[in-house]
Image 1 (cartoon, helix red, strand yellow):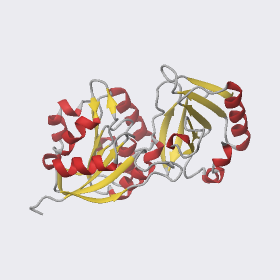
Image 2 (spheres, rainbow, N blue to C red; image 1 turned 30 degrees about the vertical axis):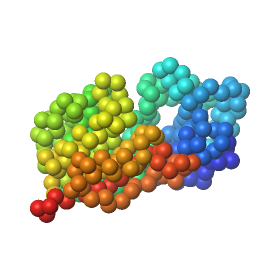
Image 3 (cartoon, rainbow, N blue to C red; image 1 turned 180 degrees about the horizontal axis):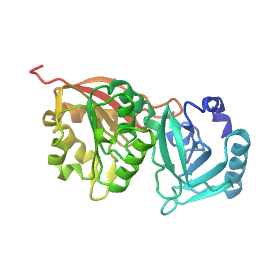
Image 4 (cartoon, rainbow, N blue to C red; image 1 turned 30 degrees about the horizontal axis):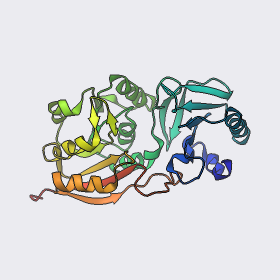
Length: 303
């Protein structure tokens, strides 16, 4: 497995101390479809989606510790087990650290939650937002730990409104802003379910940029196949003319065509602009199975 790693990318650690090293879940590497490996400096995190031989995973951990000079801990997360527990395989027991992505800092937590706090596959989306946020009012739906919001303020956004029904992750988002010494007076945190609280979303409208990065499914909250259209239908009442829409889709069962059709049927005034690719390491054996990020522009007929 290690022959597929690009260890040369670790040399520029000052620029990015968080990246995927191996993406087995893309099914591009036969026999390793159940393995992902991430560098969250100084931790290597191996994620397993099925059980493996304990001697094999320990050998991989020992080799990674040797091959990566800055590594202080190799941990494994068993996503194949109930509650996705973590285990330290070699090195120190590190449960929290701070990583750097393109000059921005983010808190990472290991061992407490299923996710660490930063989704690495959407790094290029955050870069796009940083480069296009100047003087914009931005709506960040399903904001999680507010990484998009941090990128937006770094790019000069006028205001960002973060919407997520989980108060805990919004608190971590506030911490990420403070970690980067950003003015939180420019940021709003709304802990609501958008599908029941459109009034709260409209409160700060109109917006210049919409970011929609929903989970595929959350019991009692989100079924994106059913619910994405509800977001698109609200664009005319939420967005300024010529606003940008960064629409993300995480479901491997739904293709880009689902997004194109949903937009076409529910807000035909939106024009497709471009696709924002995931970093190269997120290699997929089949197009459309990984994260989809499409940029549209809202162009009502009055413009």
